[in-house]
Length: 308
Image 1 (tube, rainbow, N blue to C red):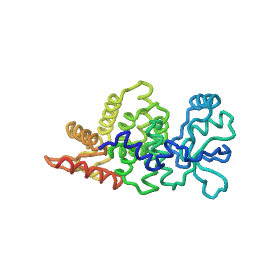
Image 2: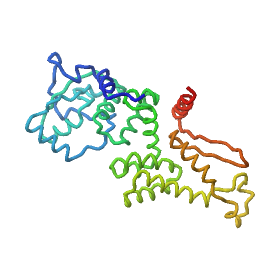
Image 3: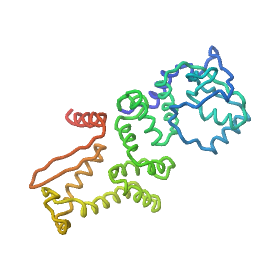
Image 4: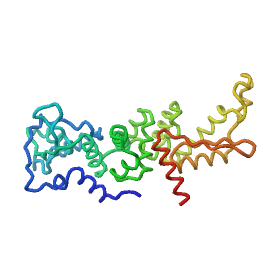
């Protein structure tokens, strides 16, 4: 079940403490030298709009920094701080020429810093899908989170988290197009089906951008390309490559039954992972591919829910 925005806010408050989100007079706001502050190493946001920062810097020159940043001591550095939240304000304050910035000090572990960084940004919907995916990957790889726990913390469904993480299988050239907004999340999800064929991905991306294809049109393009490739690459089922003479390979290859292809596509889209079917003489097998145990767990949960 998808967590609401209210639940997400409560999760952030639980990590930072209610007082950090709404500072009271009992908290001491420090004036911290800007040159003693270092960025958050777990910051999932990589892109900061220069125009937006300039606008915020203009506002800071007029009104000052209205909401304190949140910092912790920087490990191994004396009298230095590391940002927990508020990097955009910190960057804009530097741009505005400030020497100091108001901040609140918190004791916080690396795990809490990463959670806060992701939650803070996702709640404001500032991150692009690749940045969210990389943030989730950090939670899972560095801190041992399951897809389910990451989903609860971030306020998304487990299926959404799994689909986001699947984006990271795409080449960096494609991820850069998603980060820049030239390809949407919908386009990216459709293109993941070609993760094992990187030579085709750049071609598809170019066509999507040049022809301004919709997600549905992109899916149709991918199906067409896969069908065309199947005509020339897929051997007859039950025939081993060694059994085919080089000069007659073209005769030993055929297109997979359109109905089987359609079922594969529907299953892949529903389950969110690659499904392939082999069918011969009225019988066959269904192969479901997964990359991690988390994906297998998510698949099992989905199938078990069907029986409930």
